[in-house]
Length: 113
Length: 220
Image 1: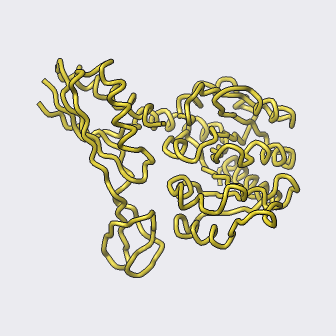
Image 2: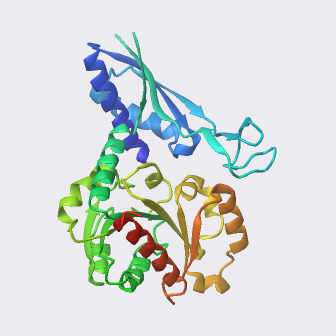
Image 3: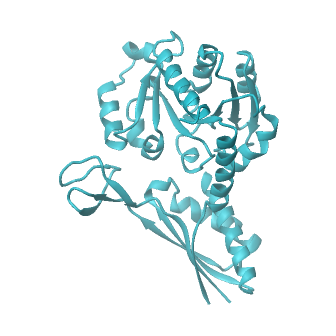
């Protein structure tokens, strides 16, 4: 349940930013969560619902964009979305590939007024 | 009004981890973050390994557990200084928890710091502590399917230790499949197969660590 710790961090970052921007109310939070972060969107939702009232507007909504793992194979000069954490090129089977998506754990944006 | 942030959620943790890493570099301390499920044998490996280290390797251990000081007490019996962090329900250690206990450690005297994370194959993987090396421990009694079930931690760990190999004849652990799965996840990973009960394989693990500690100490 490290999602609780992650959400605490999300709320703290947004609280500070909203204050800086003179916003009284935060209405929406958008996150990007990669498959390789071990953070479950459902658990993040639960943590958000449980703790948003402490700092954000109680009606604030959370949107999570789940990012699948994408690898880039330099030999084939091609990128692939991979399933089941298979970190090798589906084309040439090379294991020296670069992960180009799936490790994101980002606050994309928030909305407020 | 929409405010674009594109901010890393873990930026606070990562900033403290960077501070820890800088301090460890200044003090020339090699830091290992050991992770496994509960009962894989992290503490027992340390109990056996620490007394095998040569005189010039001065170690200290940070123990992470939800409650109790049992593990720190076990480590101290080997003559190595240990400090216990109780996370009180927290499922992982974070960089700040490490930062908070650094003042309790004899940083001027040590060149190896081993951090034994909370037993958990999921949550600890995401939190940088400022370590040089992540080591994952799996025991044969847990089954060879764990790397594919918990791919993130097995991909992140530069070193994988398979423990309790003295029990291989009594369990259905397919060591070939285990290695194939790890090769798929992490082809450059360094692996050791050990038994902390019989001591088998521990000398290789000790030798590897000693080389790493000396390299950082000597600025190689």
